[in-house]
Image 1: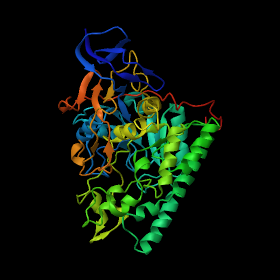
Image 2: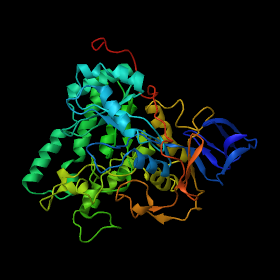
Image 3: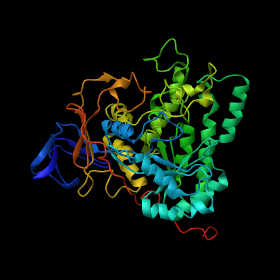
Image 4: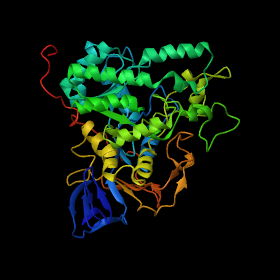
Length: 493
């Protein structure tokens, strides 16, 4: 007798689709068997011909950060994750400039997570101020905390590193087999354009998109790829928004250089027109500032052709992972997006960057990718579960459906069985007062989310079922995608 049995669904991995005749037997949170022989369980899920995919891993989320005081905390963020089919999230512990005690940085973030989580979680480390003292602590952070990924920035005064600092980080992460995530935009280009826009008092939300042109992302992407080649280390360029920048990743991959790319839903579905007027389905005629809801960086691009270009990069394999970059702030709050109203006038530079999207990530790609035939179910699993697990040291227990793996699943409705609906923010489980995807039509949604063998979400019978604190902290191992290519150059040894 198993704790849970799942059957009568198409079981999807990154490479295969198994038929509904396969039963999955789960005990003690682990997949114990997969067989065509009928199994008995204390609980049984009949998938009724729907797809059974691995639990989603949202590997890029911002939760309980000081720069977003109105954003989600671990309770609301993880609750929203579970309701959207995610069983694992990876948020960020941030090193403030001038603070070189990484143990204290991580301890502070553990404290923030102590409220509990509905899903499993791990931490990335954001490095804003590297020096010799800080770098010497990285091996201990890796071994004791299981934090095997670092994010760095080429823009934002609070976080940006120069090329020399980036090289220092890349060298250390190569030695430790850590995954290096890079936000790549040219800071000087952005500052230059910002200055010109300010002089002309062009400060409405729409001008945010003009202040961060595609060329700023393209140049920085090419530059960080070049830096990675010097150290001979893989990198992941996060939240890529344009085909031009992605072309540099594609060219590197064609040369068998291990450069990886991440993109996000906003770069598939939203254009900068939203910054002018807000969502066309929910705009308020008396609110000229509503476009601030859509300020994120890199910005929403101006041409629908750019969105199609990102879709092409998903389809041809240039994009490695699909994450939400959930970095929300409330809109109608003086410390949220409306920080951008200064003395009654709009100032896009003062608006907190970022969009909510942790709950809508999987349904968007499933509905508009899998159900429309733009991508295969296997590609969906690869982007949303398997590759994140490989990149971030979780592939020994997460990211696929197989014997010995954690029993994490997202189970979908059979195509055409769920009544389509237009999304309203009130349907979501985050603590944010809007969604950038309101008004979009969804033809499917996670029917069940299963976390280590427990039904955590049942859309038709109670919604979120598991308790706050059900999620475990994950100590992660080295990346299986981002290991070094060859011998370290003796100059750097």
